[in-house]
Image (cartoon, rainbow, N blue to C red):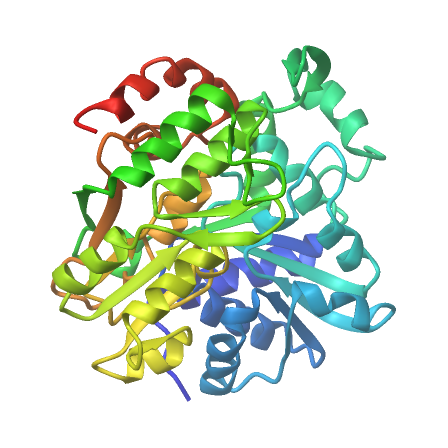
Length: 416
């Protein structure tokens, strides 16, 4: 049986006390601090027999391993399989990466699926409980009886806890903006239900090093980018057409184009520039994990590393010569890539959450050399501007793009 560290045991006893009293608790733990083992120790202290863990699909194998190591029997499933468990009864459900339940103002499908279960207690876990807004905490805590059970839905809660504003979207439609939750009020209510464990408590001694790589793409890439920004369309009817007639679509198409692929209207994804993939093969020769955004990027990388790549974190960590290639959204949470010397972001996601969690995948307790996170940006592209924004824990939005767009076409024209 595995021996827990003192900080994990202490956190588990705190969680046990909170759950015994309030039936809901939140474990806020930084990456690689052993949240799962702490949660299982809490279940052991509670002496419950029916435990359900809900997580991301890629994290299931690792969590089952932790349950076996600590000697706790638990059922582990992913969010997509929850409808199959509708009506089932549990003593304790552990909701991993609970921020994924935090959509607002309307509840997410994940929230609704979890509410179809019968359970006595719920333990929420995340390293980033509210990465974009404290409003994301409402539906997470609404899975239990405290602290906001007196509010029948998010809108009633927002009357007390949110500075509601008007904002314009699309062609000028005015909608309510519920993102400006009142931090002091929210934290006051959830603090008695929250236990935090940090990498400092865990004894982490290394920091993550970030490096930016600028890759010169083929001339065709810059021409496509220029036409998308200038005309909003590339191609002719009946042939391969790339349509970007709104700012949102332009952002998406540029995101694809600057890594050498693009999704056409009727003919699917097209790969036209392998410069970034070739750069990876040439420059990353240590133990490497690569995260991509679009499927065509993944296909391009797998072809470049044919015979060496895997999308299994377990195989990657156990095989010295393996290269991990994974989609950033499914690999940014709950995936252990701790044997990686280099973690490469093939393209940068617009979401700050992908930046915050993805960059920590290579951290682990006891590491003596700092993991290096590499960012691959196309020369003269929008990518460095996105990077600057997500580093400040802000999503890169349409408003940012509209502000930046004016100088981009001319930049893309240079030296063509």
